[in-house]
Length: 80
Image (tube, rainbow, N blue to C red):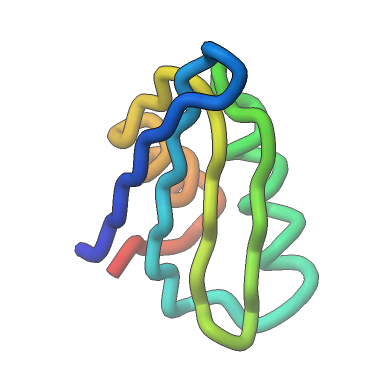
């Protein structure tokens, strides 16, 4: 499983960025499903889904990595 975590402070607020490899994504429906599930997680402020590189980038505050992975799984995809 490939998960890259970056933390920074912006204007006194802690910001985390999770980059996840999601190889099964192929279309707009895949992107919508992932955005819906991951967007429901507390603390998520933005989601970038790149179908070409198969990378999902999640930004937010106090992100729960396990919850993000579980949400992607709920959308029907494995993090690899």
